[in-house]
Length: 146
Image (cartoon, rainbow, N blue to C red; front, side, top):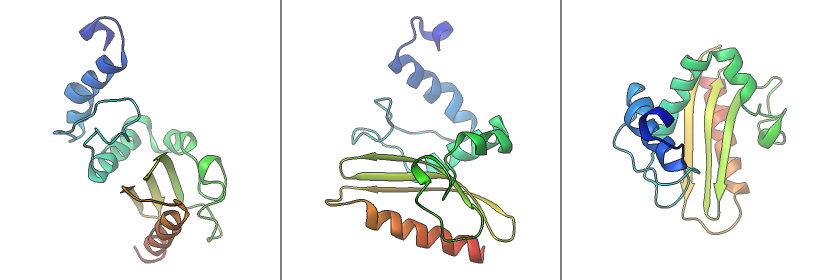
């Protein structure tokens, strides 16, 4: 972005991502106005985020990508979540603001199939724990049945 836009700023990095990096993986027609990606002013869908996960998985490589993400039941923001199976099956990044909770990453099913996913819950009042419980149920079902 520095070569294309001059001095690197959050805006120039976002512009470079929007006009060069994201279209290369099929992510277009987004509104991204700040670095968090979670602001109420952004218009990015869970489908867009799942495409980003798939693009990173291909670009970075599965082994390295998994090392970069918190592992369900083991590390980071997922250390106390997704502990319901014998082995880890979710690798994901969390994101939260007041009234917003997101989770995007990869899941490996019991049969060994890899799935990219993204959840985005917004405009809620109260605690995020009930949303995490439902995401754990849903991803647990995917692990067992897909």
